[in-house]
Length: 221
Ligand SMILES: *Cc1c(COP(=O)(O)O)cnc(C)c1O
Picture 1 (tube, rainbow, N blue to C red):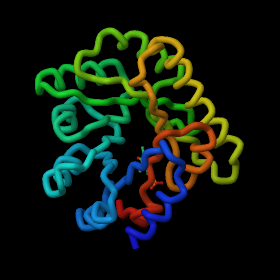
Picture 2 (tube, protein in one colour):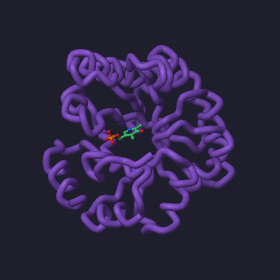
Picture 3 (cartoon, rainbow, N blue to C red):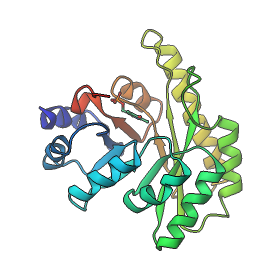
Picture 4 (cartoon, helix red, strand yellow):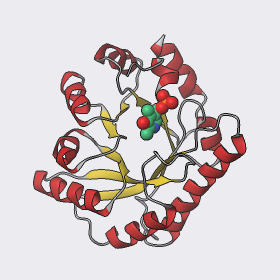
């Protein structure tokens, strides 16, 4: 079932779009099934869950952290993840950089941009993301700033709003790419699109989709 859904989704993705299989709250057996079907990039939203799953699954998996990151969890996440997609403050960005330096490793990050209508969704305003990129561009030692991540509003009945949100995320990426990160080929990632809206995200320029329930089924909270 998981393998089938994974293959179906993958075959519909254009070349150059990375699939992050969002496996939060699903048991290790489900991840193993996806792994056996060839999936190597997984997304988790809680630090301990990420650490535990990483410890019991093969080492060639690339783990993406996609949840809200607290300062006291930075060490756990820097140890286990290859990319942190949800950087939403200068303090967290610098804490990640210090931790990665301490461990002698490099880590990729995305700036999380908030454009959705819901007040509960975390992230930087587009202008704040550009300002943070400008400030961080020369200051990071072990972190590679790779791009932006964002979510569209939860408005299933309003595809125009979803499309407008994705356009704003892509515009924020372009503002950074042609501004503070100009000439840096590492800045290449727009992570947007989930189970219900990834096709719209791709047509708005997404290079990375984060898909959970369409692969693993509904989550139990
Ligand atoms: C849970 C989650 C997803 C996956 O959502 P689905 O609707 O299950 O595909 C993607 N991105 C983030 C940040 C998430 O927290």
